[in-house]
Length: 123
Length: 251
Image (cartoon, rainbow over all chains, first blue to last red; front, side, top):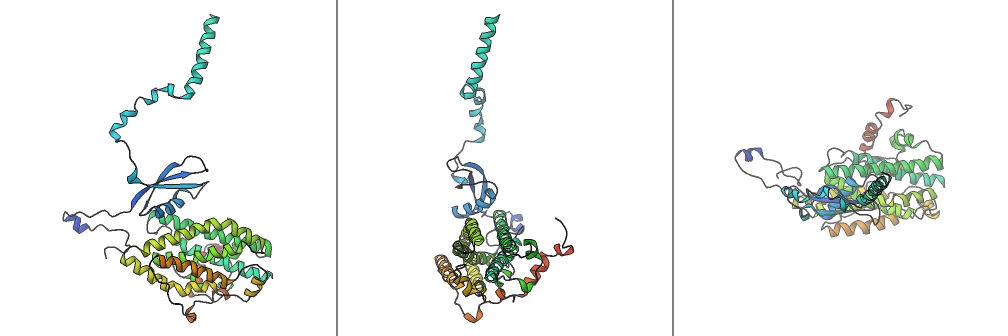
């Protein structure tokens, strides 16, 4: 028996000193999403360690839904998440400049133009 | 009549307080961070149930305040079953105890939702969801560990054997049993035990383990009449150590 707790493996220092490598058998992680009201979007809130979706969900309940209002939780394997490489962050670099894609921009723009026109007329 | 209802309220409240205290002993030393937090949080829920039941005793039956009932009664006045008094042991025992105890508690509250004792019926509806989660947690861990490795399977079967006759002590009847049934307060311990046995047998068998053989003379009775195991006094001494320094202190 390697460990008193069968769910974890302990580092055997004498073996690693000999240059051996141990397999990492920690539990996998699950991404947790929280929904505070029926019909509203689920929002990512963190992770839990677990070996099955059922275990992930029951553990997520107390980690992320023990305070405040909750209607549901989602869990999904972290390994199922598909994402960009961090060095490709430049893809998003100029986005903050594209204010014309922000609906708020037009409201302000209209008011500025109106003000400018009025001032021109007054001059 | 009120003595019969009080007896029922005391045994439920004392069960909840003592198992809540026991399970909280895992705080900080749970098997993994997430489970440490979940088990502690459920232990807190149990203390909350105890407080709600003591509050009914206080407000509807003229008993002292919830704090006084929880902290200042002697061991012999407690009506909890011996099962909840047992030390936490290793995690296999604590999970098996949660699994067996919470199934009984869930069915008890479910039956009490129809009780003629209105405050109890209201409480039963209020805590239903909380206990449903406790049962789900117990079932999931129980099945997971029973179907894990050869070692975990053997440990779960052994813990089940150890806990079995203690768990059957939950259903010890008091002198008020017939009165509670006749007045429509509670369907009774026999009905509860029948439903509980069907539930836990289904889960145990689905998990690939065996229900231990019941030997009537081995059932751990006594708690419901104030005859407790050696562990209750130790627990009460520890739990009330601070409050006894100055029982009139304002917090």
